[in-house]
Length: 227
Image (tube, rainbow, N blue to C red; front, side, top):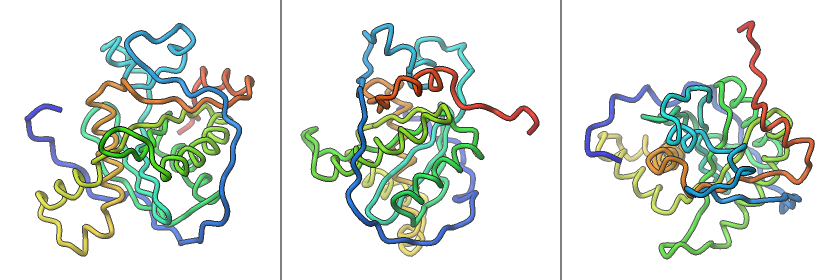
């Protein structure tokens, strides 16, 4: 990221709040290929490039929708929205399990999203943690549901983003009480900041095993031109 000050961000929260539910049970999903993107992506990989990577390759490309940053927690999930620059915090959901997945898809449709960028917890030395496995399980199940509508799901290293979010909120002058309610959404914003700043390099695609979903991912989400 550069040193220039970011433009003012829209107010936190553009959606209504949601009720809280307890998380029940471990999630297991059959997911096929997890493809890491680098400068030497294969032809197959290029069919599912993340938006930030595609824009880096072709600066004139403008065919993508918004990216939805997701910071998954045990009981709270923060969301942020962006399209290549200046992502903004969106909302914190107090949902888990299937209700969380369905709400994420609903938000993706309303906000014209075509990819989910989910923060993957890692240790300071880049190793995955027990929490990483939980996030991978949720991301895998979401990827199957999302692929039915043409949405892609990517994992992005989120190490340090919570501290970055806290520092950002303090610099903004937010009081402690306000920070507690919004920290997850600002953490999701930092996940997107990292994703955009790295031009999508290093993101990991969660690709469902079912081949019929791959064609839907190539086409992308269906937009209702009547709206």
